[in-house]
Length: 74
Image (tube, rainbow, N blue to C red; front, side):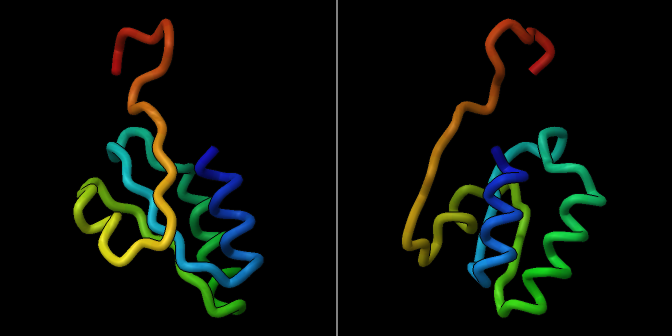
């Protein structure tokens, strides 16, 4: 889901903050490409583990669980 948010946010010039554990961050190459597009369109993409920072001044907050069904290693 994060990849989809990054792609559309970058193309539309939106400012996106993704808050999740570092081991769940998007692939670095996808992040880099989306950040480059966002820079061209006036947007930004930021990753953080701090939910207070992530939600500060947010217009929209979308939530999801930090664990996956049937995966015990998270």
